[in-house]
Length: 404
Picture 1: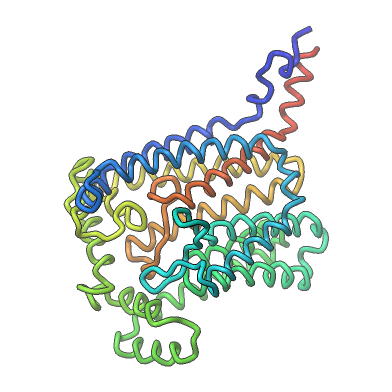
Picture 2: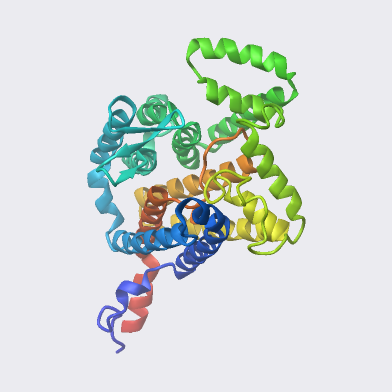
């Protein structure tokens, strides 16, 4: 009789999806290389320490990896006990950020919350996880009635509260937060309803984008002024739409980042200028190590490097899809689907913004962009996915064969 895995001390390792863990770690290492390349000039110029951002991100990834491992060792059903606490905490943090002195105003936007004099974080990242947990829990608890209108309204209504609080100062994160529950609901709803919602949503989005692109700039500005009077969108948000319509609008002002990012992408060609050889990172592209890092990647590694990175993300999402499909329960499956939706939206929006497909707004590229709060929460979500993967019925079959 062979020993059980638990007896030889490796059972706790047997449940990990090492393919997923490997691709995440590979993305982190690749991200560190790109952060070093994109930030060295700026760090040396401003801080007299070209390694500052690299070292800071390396430390954050070390902490984040520990967070991911700890979270992965917690049974995913345990998180259901903290769904409403997490939701309440996220809403409170957003209220404190938007309406009290704890909110840190930067460039006219209040996205950060001050915890201490030296510590701050982005509550929007907490909201994303809170929305994933709450939506997964509600779908699990009401699986048989999920196609009923009242439950759809309840879920979307609960997600809309923190979503609109985030939308007030962070358009991209607000859109992601509102889109995550839609993606999760579509995965469990009736196929007919799912495809109707998908095609209607896609059609409306394309129609809006094409209309904005084709409208004369003067006409678009006139419409924007009327929208601004209603308070639905702020002046800086509307200006980004004008720039999206015509990248050369205010090319030396608010459109400067977009134009320089497009220059970086265009100059990279198929194979790029070579790692570290970017010229646009030398003070031309603002936020080159976070919101615009994909532009620097394209300039240095070209179309080949961009496609290789996208393939890595697709493989990561593929592994998550397998874990979701093998999950013992609907709660675990929906948690993974929520994380999948989050990462997919982040990648699509970041690449779309940098390449000019979407209006300019700050979106980080998971595991590649510089950032502390985002890195911690990204790794926390990976920990949740690994936790769901460890609760795999296939493992019991392996143990039963070992005992025979």
